[in-house]
Structures are given as structure tokens and as C-alpha cells.
Image (spheres, rainbow, N blue to C red):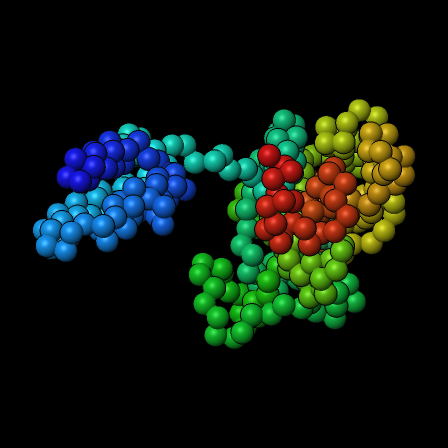
Length: 346
Ligand code: DAH
């Protein structure tokens, strides 16, 4: 009997280290302690043991049973450890440098803005910036749009509360502050800060009281342009814009200037573009923005001699250009932070 018990104990002891699956453990345990197991058989055989030998025999079996169960416990601990290790992966060496994070990417609007910057930089424009919170004077008055001018209605919207702190925005008289409705404000800031000749673009965020839909957003981006020199003509304006659209939309792209009205340019034009390179959008005029020759009244407002200097200005929508370039049909995609959309621009 003792040999049999010892043989079972040895078998268990030898088998346990090789068991790596819970189902294997259960199957093995059944061969020992299950209803038809070897240890169970011995227990069943107790009834044939003479009565006087039973207490000693029972004690012996219990001792072996306790040892066998200790091996079972150890086997289960091994299995727990193995499963945990599988869950947390290979061991970590904390002294190694951390792995590179997944590469980020620039937002499609930033990518588009940078492309536009690059094109204009090549022909001598520099990038100028202005604040997003402006006074009415920079946004309208200096741009030849006095308070009672009808052109002002459309953009005369997002005013700041009286007590808002505006950082370093200069305050003229009792003016109210407004979220700028166009980047044309930077024309004025540039002309006040620097002397002609000037050649700047100014990309940036603008605000309108628009209800958001597929083509409108209360917050979007424009790129302003201003070119001042002696004897600048509409031919120069057209040449710059032709160059710009050919660089952005590819060879064969052209510009059409459609007579229009803006208070700060005279004459003024809508700026349309046509390209053969854009699939469904090819070969039709698409509006990109507005432009014209700087109105002498704007020069007067900033103290530039309009007898000596002439210039042109333009303003374009950055979203508009990105949407045309990438065939995006809803402006709201730009602002939703949906990685499925954004990852397409990696
Ligand atoms: N500021 C105009 C707008 O937001 C766009 C514009 C038109 C800008 C003509 C210009 C310009 O510089 O000359 O609607």
C-alpha cells in the first residue's frame, strides 16, 4: 500500500512541472483524484483492510493525500502565473529607451496653409500675423467700411463683452472689440508697422455668425495677401494669382477675375479658378475668394501716400482650397477630430 501511495506521489511530483494548460491539469488530476482515479481506488480499497489496520492506514493515506494536494495547489499557482505572463507580455526592461510614439501628422488645414505659404514665399511674400480679437477700426473703419456702410452688416457680428481683457490689442477711443471676421485686418496692421514696398500674406482664423452646415462654419480660416509697390497694376495681381493656382492645383490651372465690390479695393473682383486636374471638379469655374487694387481711402487711413504707392490685395478661404484639393464635401470634417478622416492625410 505504501509503495502504491509513494508511486502516485512521485507520478504527481514529476507531472506537475510539465503542465502548462488548465485543461491538462484537470485531466491529469482526474487520473489521480477523480472518481476513477488511482488515489480514489486506494480509498475505495479501505473497506477490504482489516478493521484494526484501518486507523494506521487511514493516517498514511491522509498524509499522502495532503502532499498530493500541495502539488495540486502548486500546479494551480504555476498556471495562474503563466496566464498572467501571457496577459502582460514579455518581461519589460525598464532601463531601455521608450519605444518611439506613433508618428503624428499635421492637420489637413495646416498642411494646406503651409503649401500656400510655400508658394507665396517663393515669390517674395513673407508671412504676417495679427490678433484674432480686433477692434472695429481694424476690422472695418480702416478698411473703408464706416459704421453705416451696408457691406458691414454681414460681418458686424461677434462682439466681445465690455469688460473682456484683450491682452495687447490696442484700444482706440471707445471702440468695441470683435472677433475678426476676415484677415484683411492684417493689411492695416502691416501698413501701420512697416513702410512700403510690402509683400505679405496672412493666413489665420476668422469668425462669422454663421450657422454650421456643409459649407459654413462660425470659425474658419482665410489667407490674406497684400502687395504694395510703385506702379502695381491688375496685371501684377493676375500674374501672382495665376502662379498661385498653377502651383497649388497643377499645370493648366487658370484664374478669372469677375468684377465685384469690396469696400477696401477699387476695382474689386471675385477670384475664380479653373483647372483640368481635379476629376469631377475639373473645367468649371470655382470661387476661391476676393481681390482688387487697394482703395486709396485705405492708404489714407494708414498714412501711405496713394500718389506714390499702389497695390493689390486678395483674400482666400483655406478650407475652400483644402476641400477642392482633397474632394472633401463637408467643411465640418475639419473640426470633428475623427481619426478616420485625419489619418487619410498622413
Ligand atoms: N475680406 C474679404 C472677405 O472676407 C475677402 C477679400 C476680398 C480680401 C477682397 C481682400 C480683397 O483682400 O481685396 O470676404
